[in-house]
Length: 177
Ligand SMILES: [Zn+2]
Image 1 (tube, protein in one colour):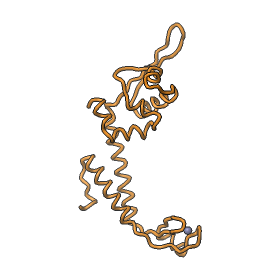
Image 2: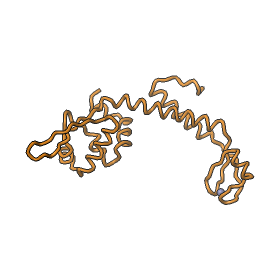
Image 3: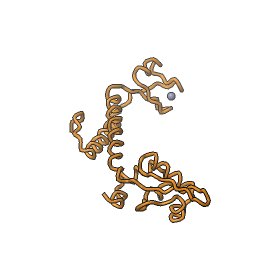
Image 4: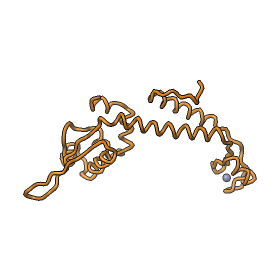
């Protein structure tokens, strides 16, 4: 996939945004072909050098950029030449989604296996055991806690799990349509 196509994908944009943050986004969203220095990027994009460097190192830490150092023989200064390696994005995104899916499935399980009680005053949720231990009174404010439905939460999770499974092309056996 070409860089341009990758970067038009909203999922990939979101992924990059989560990695580098809003300040780093101009750097992450405009990968040049071939090598580039941090100074060149800063000038080209009209950004602070520090913001450019920060974004580049985050990309580096996530295996999405690499660099090589050149020492100027006269001045002794080091120049970093950066290469963006976005061909790894789809693969990384997939393992990211797999992790998220597994976490969601565990959380869904937890929601289904437990009963919950809510203190409406404080907005605190308790598991059944906790609520019982406190005599069904909120330990913070003393109001009585009420049984709480989590159907909507579970429904929202089901939806997200299905979306992720679709994107990953895996069959999800736990959820019956
Ligand atoms: Zn309370």
